[in-house]
Length: 138
Image (cartoon, rainbow, N blue to C red; front, side, top):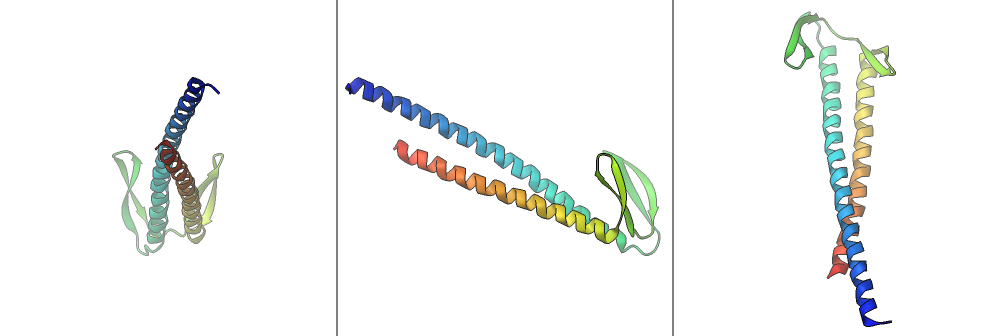
């Protein structure tokens, strides 16, 4: 093989590795963003479960401010919440006991946590690949 051809192949291989490295970094950035969104969703679901448990404990009538939209509230009275109306998808709403609703929220938080773990695993694999490519560049 001619030395110029070998140099050109080597240069092409380096360019391919650089492109692969850039793609890996982009993918890791996207996964990081997804994980951040999921962490926020998990926190919201967990707080909701805690709030539902607190509402269930209200024995006497209590006045609350219920949000209608961002910065818009209505006064409402509540006296214990043993049942909740839960959207189960496709616009279908069903009555669920407080216990079942709280369990559902905790299950959702666990499922989200599982997805976050899967993303973390993918990110570790990509980080290992990126490190391997970086090492071969040297």
